[in-house]
Length: 197
Image 1 (cartoon, helix red, strand yellow):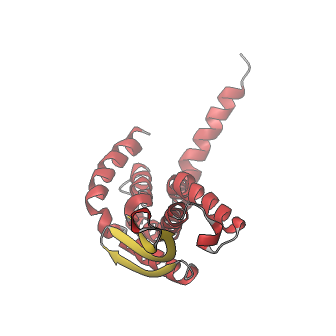
Image 2 (cartoon, one colour; image 1 turned 180 degrees about the horizontal axis):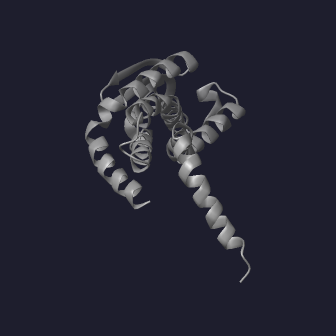
Image 3 (cartoon, rainbow, N blue to C red; image 1 turned 60 degrees about the vertical axis):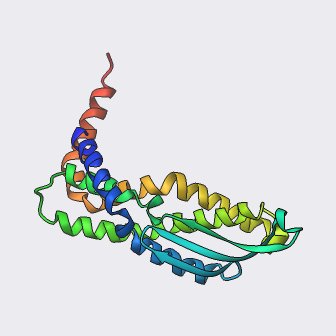
């Protein structure tokens, strides 16, 4: 456990310096998802290292412009929900940094994290759009169930997926370690707890 925490701290420091580049594939997937999945709201998506910006087709009233309407843009950092990478790498390294196939598992995990990180970023941007439009169904040209799906998707994408998915991936990628070390340790612990005192 201490090794995992130490690796996590060290890797998070490194990741914070390179996250604009390591999360670039996430930005690209988010770009495709927004332009293909929400064309009624998204005019154009711009991606540059560290930032993704979506120009919307949603018109809102501008208070200082005499009630005239204007479209708006929303932006996010693709790394915002990509912090699962240092979590996954810390778990892999804590399980044994000299083990065979470590770097292949790390690379596979890095790629497998992209879809959920992109989903979290998409939901964050969609949530910004609907909140900027003040959840107005007429302005958004949407049904209530669509807004509710975005709100629930945003909550899952912001609170659950960024930390759960790297742990689940580690359990899958390091199945041998889990079977050899964690399962027997858990059984011993469960057996000791079940002994009446």
